[in-house]
Structures are given as C-alpha cells and as structure tokens.
Amino acid sequence: MEDLHFVSGKSRRKAPKLTNFHYYRVDLYFQVFDTQLKEVNDRFDEVKTELLLCMSSLSSVNNFASFDKAKIVRLAQLYPQDFDRTYLINLPIQLDNYIHDMKMHSEFSSLRGIGHLAKELVKTRRCTNYMLVNKLLTLALALSVATASIERVFSAMKIVKTPMRNKMGDQWLSDSMLVYIERYVFAFIDNELIM
Image 1 (spheres, helix red, strand yellow):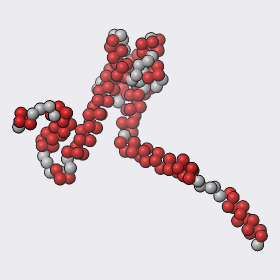
Image 2 (cartoon, rainbow, N blue to C red):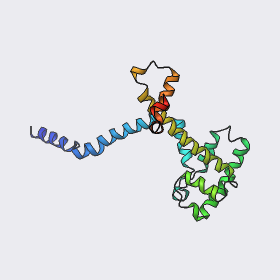
Image 3 (cartoon, rainbow, N blue to C red):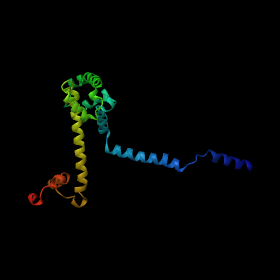
Image 4 (tube, helix red, strand yellow):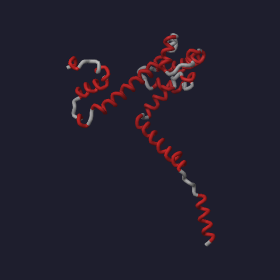
C-alpha cells in the first residue's frame, strides 16, 4: 500500500503546475494572438499581403533597411500594364544604381516613408535618373490613398445602408454616401441652398 502512495505522489510531482501567470502569459496570449491573426488574414488576402510587403521594400526608413530588390521587381510584375518586358529587364539594374546612390547621399538617410522619398527624388531631380523607381513610388502612393478611400467608403456604407434602408436604389445610396463621407464639407453649406 505504501508503494502505491509513493507512485501516485511521484506522478503528481511530474504533472505541470498551471499557474495564473502561465494562463495569462501563455494560454490567453496565444488566444488573443490567434484572434488577431485571423482578423488580419480575413482583411488581407494573400495578394494584398504580398502587395503590402512589396511596397514596404521601397521604404527609406532606417537608411533603406527594408530594401529588397526581388520584392520591388515583384511589385512591378504585379502591374504588367505599367511595366512591360523592357522595363522589367531594366528595373534590377536601375535598382542596384538607385540603392547605391541613395545610401551615399545624406539627404536620403533620414527620410520617413515613401511619401518623403518621392518628394526628395523630385526635389533633387533624381526622379529622371530613376524613372522606374519613381513610377513604383507613385504607384505605391496612389494605392495607399485608394485603399484608404475604399476603406472609408465601406465603413460609411455600413452606417448609411442599414437593414431598414436595405431597399434604397443605387443612386439614392450613392447620394447618401457622398453626403455622409463629405459631411464636413456639407456642414458649411446652408440647408436652404441645398434644397
């Protein structure tokens, strides 16, 4: 009987002790992390994620720390109407020259993002030397604005088109959305003038 008690006591000692610290630090953390990862994956499909990663390779932050020639070429490949075969052949060569030039000049070392980089390229007139890079920067900036605008529209649509208003026509929905999205502009216009 004594041996049995010893064995069960020994097996209890081997069982891991779950503490509150372990629960909050590990179990809960993983649950929150999995939830956030699912939300990101639901919001950004593989193509959008690849697009964002490629665009981030253009960033000038930390003296071009995230520069990745292969991802930048891939970004160009995603837009065959803007980057034909000749452009795609010349782009890697231009990128080698571009990154070498950028790292040699101090005015490019402390820039904060692709917007500032695009401005500095124009200001220093290097946009003509690096036409393809400038084209990619312009495309990336336009995509950022377009994506933000689309997000605003869908967010507004959830507010404007409620289940009660679900049967409104396209023109009425479009007009209502415009007024809602640009409500700050309409706030300064007299209602009598609108009517």
